[in-house]
Length: 251
Figure (cartoon, one colour):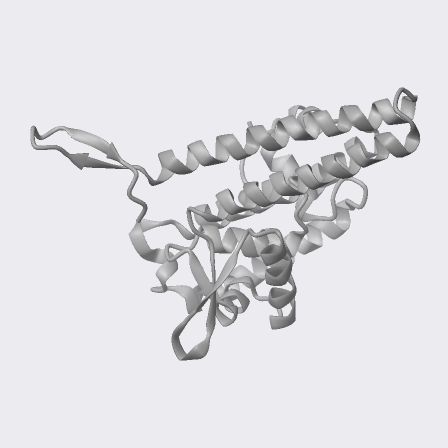
């Protein structure tokens, strides 16, 4: 199986495969590459409808050039902590970003979220995000505002009156609850249309089914999120007999 970075010829084959409507897995088999490699390559370079082999190849060369330039400055930095390998970390961050983009997040929002998740502190200032992602402060501000609106990050006071943008164990819980509430509101709106369009009509039946479906999903999500939150925050406590018992104390 070939290893290393994709060649220009392989990128041309990817472009031809996309034009023919082939799935990522099928393109990957033809190139004897992992499907994740093809997915990441396409999502990083415009997506399936805008992918261009020559542009993707030049973009990859530019990224590699920037990394070579940045490497001397980064030696001895915190990225080297815990025995981590820079290249492995970068590859993982790119893979994580790709998955977030596939879930519907725009690229910059996905990059910011990945950066926060892979930070040991779980929180970074705007200046730190700008430095790590090599983008403008405006890009960071726009991405953070959107992520806040989705309850995927939160702000907290930092040193010298600089805000830190944080992800923690409770962020996903809050995001799931917000999503469930949004679904519940949509279900209620759909149900209001039943009376307006006339109960028993095809349109009303459709709206009623939407409302019932979303009600079920919302209730299930809230129940599962509450249960998962309890498990996540439960810490074992030693009893007098030396055995551990679950505790619902939340740190």
